[in-house]
Every structure is written in C-alpha cells, then in structure tokens.
Image (tube, rainbow, N blue to C red):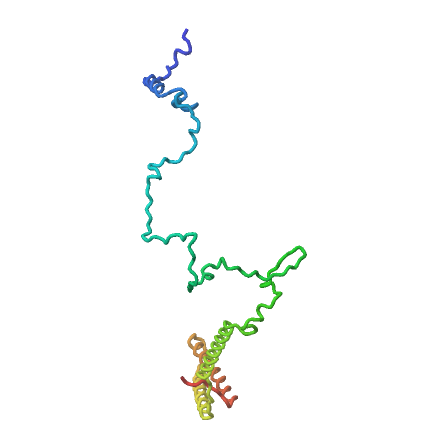
Length: 244
C-alpha cells in the first residue's frame, strides 16, 4: 500500500537562497530607520556654563585709544569766542533768514468758527460762510477755456457752411431753354416712331424665344420714351444740372 504523498513533486527551492539570505542579514541592522539617532554623547567635561549662550559683541582688534582720528577738513574753523569778548555791532547782510528758515516764522492761525456748544470748530475758508469767490477779479466772467472752445466751434461751423455752399454752387441747376426742350422732344418722338415701325413689322404669330425677347425689348423702350415725352410736354420749365 502506497501513501498518497509519494506521487507528489517536490517543491522547487533555488540554489541561491542561502546566499540571498546571508546578503540580506549583512545589510540589516536593528534600529536602522526607527528610534533615536546614534549620536555622540556629550562629554562631562563640556558642561553648560553660566552666560555661555548670551550673544557677545565681536572683539576689537585694536583699542580705540590707540587709533588717531584724522580730519578731512584742510582749513581750521575760527576759535570759539571767549566769555569776556564783546560782539561786533552794526554789521548788515543781505541774507534773508526768514525765507531760509520758514519753520521758525510764526504761522497765522486760520479763521474758524465754533458752531456747537461742545466746542466743535469749523474752518471758514471752505465752509461757504465767508465770501471767497465773489471777490476774485474773474468772478462772473466766462472762463478762458470755454471761450477757446466756443471759438473753435464757431470756426468749424463756418468751414462747414462754406463747404456746403461750395458744393451747392458746384451742383447748381440751370434752366433749359424752350429751343433745347423742343429739340429733345422732337428727337424722342422720332425715336419712338422708329421703334413703333419695327414693332409693327413683327409677325402676328410669335412662337420663338428670340421673337418674344425682341417684342419685350421694343415694348420697354417704347414705354420709357412715352414717359419721357409726357414729361417734356407736361412741364414747360425744366432745370438740368450744370456741366462740369
């Protein structure tokens, strides 16, 4: 009697498995990525001393007493007057000390009024309570910029009117004389008679496209000539544009 596990295949195990396990153990160390870092412990000799963390100024390389200061001025100032010296009197100068020192000039207080019982003060200059603008020289006069604008508008209007007048004169109409009207009317009637003669010469039966087109063209021309003849016969006075 054979067991059931005798026919099973043995599980595959790589021959490099021991080498891989050994290599993994060589690089693996405890507390490698977790826990406190491995730092050098402080020496007991370097203990914290008093005032050791107080910031200090950098030490000077040389004492200030040994350094001699040099002055950049080449001229010496006059000596300070003594206590028993008398000042010079009667010296005049053109220098205006008030303009040079405007801060020292006492300023005149702005006029104001108190409008409440609690002491509220209002400056009178821009309050409208005192006459400010009516005392000006140009009060009630048209400002200069408005005068310039009105003058520019007037010049533009005159230029436009002159342009329109020139255009009207260029396109003016002239009266047609009776001789010209009769001559034009005579030519129109002659042209109508000629077209009417051609229209009468058409055949009675029109069955082609060209004949229909010819008939329509003659009818349109005759209708236009009839309107023109009626216009010239109806109106005795006719105006026409001037020739350029």
